[in-house]
Each structure stands twice: as structure tokens, then as C-alpha cells.
Length: 121
Image: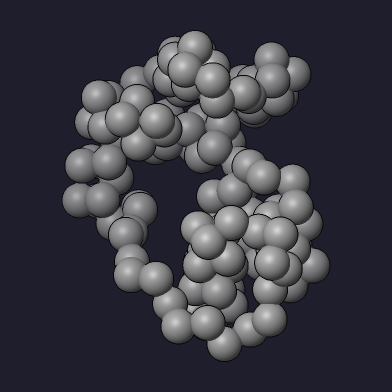
């Protein structure tokens, strides 16, 4: 659902072409991770552990974020990513995308949006 919303705004193509985002294959698991995490979250954390400090994890799940931060990985949420993309002029309106995500069931609180919006100034 997130991917469809983002693709409609051209975010994937622009961000990937600019090198700002990168799609990678799932890594081979070498670190013990919580079984409570989904496969995507496990793969993301494992990839970051294998590649070092240059990897920025985009995670909204509280348990996944906690696990990643415990391992001293860099984590950002979807809303923060969208506002960062807006600042880099990769997308036009982060808030509109967040509203669209909320309409299809992806919840990002108004308080988080307000905090991030105030950071744009």
C-alpha cells in the first residue's frame, strides 16, 4: 500500500535514480534477531548490520525500531522520510502523501506530522 502511494507521486523513480534510495536483495542472516519481527524488518536490520553505519533504516514498527536502536543502527520513520524527501525536492507535498497513507489504513499521527512540519522551517 505504501509503495503504490509513493509510486503515484514519482518518488521511487526519482529517489532511486538520484541514489537517495536503494533497493537491495535480502541478506543472508548472520545475527540473531527477535522472532517477533516480520521477515521484512528482520531483513532490513540484518542488511544494516552487515553494511555498517551508512544504512538508514525506514521503520515504523515500535519493536523493530527498538531492536535496531539497541544495535546502534540509524532509524527513521516513514513520515520523517517523506518530509526529508520534500526538503530534497524529491516530492512536492509530504503532508498530502501522509494524508493519502492515512486514508488507506497506514496510521501516522497528527502530532508526528506537526513535529516534522515544524522542522521544515
